[in-house]
Length: 338
Image (cartoon, rainbow, N blue to C red; front, side):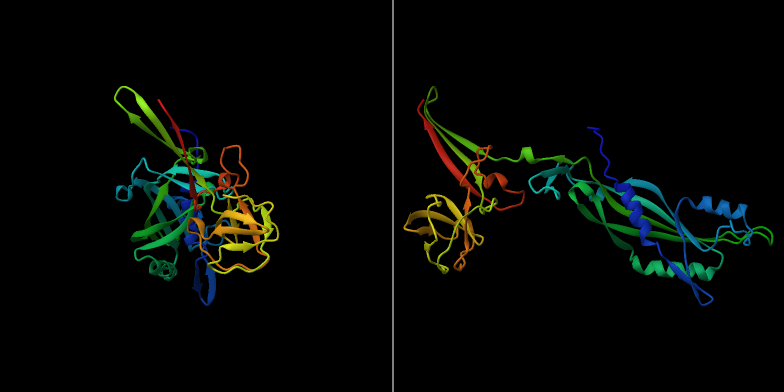
């Protein structure tokens, strides 16, 4: 607990929210004016206007303009899921590595968008360009966790719209019409992401014991390991010397010298089990492990599956099975007498 991590979720959500209103335009006397947008509290801009009310000064803040800020954070229990549940994904940068993380925690981020204008028509143009998109929510797609490419839709809900006319004081006081739009963004916070590759079970063994209450007369162990359904290494053993149909089990190849009996091969995505071979002709079981039997043309590559053993004890192709891939099982028995 409390290991360092930083997914930048708050920062990404704030940027995504601000991007919604960037590039807003209004028309003034036939010309199009772009409304500037900045992050910061509204009172900061109002104070700046009050200190420099002279419109002729080049340093004066021009109106209209918009500002937004992140104002609060609340836990959203209505979107809560099991806190101990984890999910795994394939590393987008390395298909052999599997990442894991706990389910995200739901939080709602509160935002305020302030629209400051001198003329009410300017403010109405801006507000009318915003409101139709919120009924009352607008979904933002945000990539929350870069390391696992976790992308989620964040509903941004319009909570309220208020208007305040800051026209007070003498004739020289600069008038500011202030519209405030309050939003709530339903985001998710993820914890640290760790590697789960070592947690993947590659072998399962079940022991059966038979005998009396005082002694074991027989001990049987059944072990199961995953088996690849395709050639990950892409090692080509030979090529077809003639076409084969959907149901043919006798196949002619250019050479059967590298083909091993009781092993699996792959031809154009179809897995086959070799039962015999003779004079460059092999007999196979088609569509092994529920792969689809299809027709194959002369010259198609015959690829090996698990002809060699990796350091892990699995076949080299089985050792390369990626997270999310389909795979079969190899089982073996061992027994002993007590």
